[in-house]
Image (tube, rainbow over all chains, first blue to last red; front, side, top):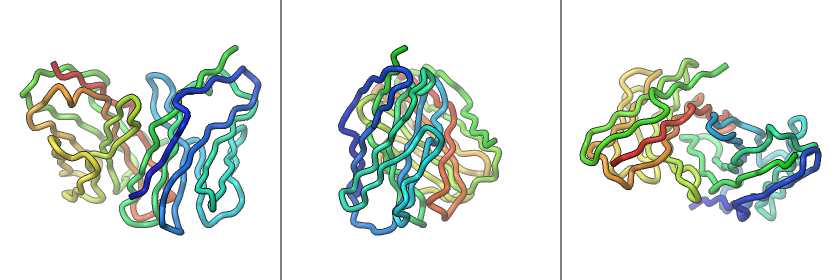
Length: 115
Length: 114
């Protein structure tokens, strides 16, 4: 069975600094997709960034980028120039290509941004 | 923008009651999902549907059922609510048969069973 592990339940970062959130996963599939979702306090969960396993280039979305290491089954999220609005729960998620598109989520990590 | 609307943000029910959680999406998505979110456990899939009247069990279907009579609406039913079903429930939707399409989430329903 596929599993997603976020080993750090909580992290904090100073405003304007950089923070890296770690995620590892376990799968025997060769084609799959990885996602980072953000859930601000009392607000809707939204997609931050996604990575296709067949792409070697790491995905980037403005201040958010990933370090995807397929052999190590690692998918970390780097947030640059952290802002107060980045404070949220962050979930790493995995799904295989095609089929029913079920997502497997990690347990989440709470990020605090200090002013 | 995709809009996924859950009928209630907060709901309080009693043990043994039949509870309905409603979810509506406005983007003609084929797939709809119900998750349960608990601290330290992340999101766990209860049921999902990839078409009208179609449903499949997720990882924790026990004590729940679902209904999808129309494409835009997906209902989660707690047949006889129990205190261990107190949780945050999230509905999501997405286009089908394309794993790289992200799921869009509702605001969640925080359900308390007394």
